[in-house]
Amino acid sequence: MMQQIKIFSPATVSNICCGFDVLGFAIDNFGDELFISKSNKDVVSIKKINGYSVPNDRKKNTASVAGQALLDYLEISQGFEIEINKNIKPGSGIGSSAASAVAAVYGINKLLDNPLKKEELLKFAMQGEFVSSKTAPADNVASALYGGIILVNNRENYKVVKLPAPKNLFAIVHHPLIEIKTSESRVVLPKSIKLGIASDQLGAVGGFIHSLHTQDFDLMRTSLKDYLVEKYRADYVPFFNEIKSLAKINNTICCSISGSGPSIFTLVNTNEEAQRLKLLFDRVYKSKNLEFNSYITSLNSKGVHVL
Ligand code: HSE
Image 1 (tube, protein in one colour):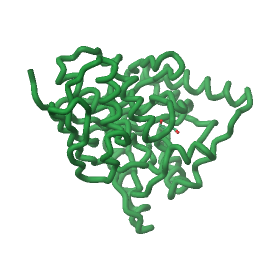
Image 2 (cartoon, rainbow, N blue to C red):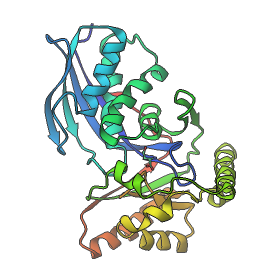
Image 3 (cartoon, rainbow, N blue to C red):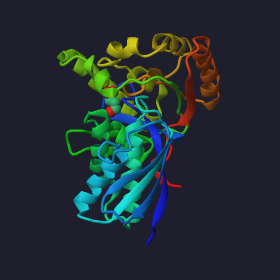
C-alpha cells in the first residue's frame, strides 16, 4: 500500500459566459500541488503551506476539510498529513479553493486504494469548497475533478456531464493579482430575474452545448452570451471592459469574467490567435502597472492527476 502521493489539481474557469454556476473548464499545466502522506494521527492535518497564504488550521483549510469529510464518511481512523504548494492565489476567480479540495479527496482516496469512484468524490470536495467560498455551486470542483469542459447539475446531487471539447478551441486567461472573494461578488447579483432573461439564457446554454458537439464556432460565438451576472460584476474587474472591447474587435468567440473575477478569459479557435491576443492583452495590464499572470490553455486538458 502506498504511504504517500503527489497530486496536481488544475485551476479552472467557471460559468464559461452563458452557464452561470453550471459550466466550467480546467486550465492545462497550472494548479496546486499536494503531497499527501499517511500519519499516526486519526485526522487530516496540514503539515506545511508553500506559496500563497491559506489557513493552516485543519478546520479552515479547504483541503483538510474535504479530506476529513471523506474519512468521516468512510469511517476510517487512518490520518493524513498534507503539504500544499499553493500556486493558485485565493480569490482569483480560477478555482483556488476547489483545486486544493479536489486534490485532497482524490489523493486520499488513492492512498486508501480507491474505495470510492471519481463521481462519488465530488460531494466531499464540495465541503472543502464551501468552507472557503461559502457558495454551493460545483462548477469549479467538477472542472478540476474531471478536466475538459463540464456541465454540472447543482440541484441533482451534483450530476456532472463531461462535454466534448473541440481540439482547436483555446482559452487565454488573464489573472490580475488582486483578490475578489466569491461570497462578496455574489452579493452584487440580483435576487431574481425576469422570465424573458431566463429564457434567453437557456437558449444560449443549449446553443453552446450543441456547438461543442458539432464544432460549429459561429453558433458558439452567438451562444456564449451572459444575461445574468456579467454586467453586475464588470466594474469590479480591472480592465474588463477594455479587454472585452479588444476581444470583440478581434472577433474572438467570447470574452468574459472567469467565475466571480478578477480573472478574465477569452476563447479563440487557433493557437496562433491565442498567442497573438495574449500579448495584446498583456500590454493592457502592463500599461496600467497591474501585476498579473496569463495563460493559454486548450479546453480538453486533464483534470486532477497523480504526479
Ligand atoms: N460560479 C460562481 C460564481 C463561482 O460565478 O459566483 C464558482 O463557483
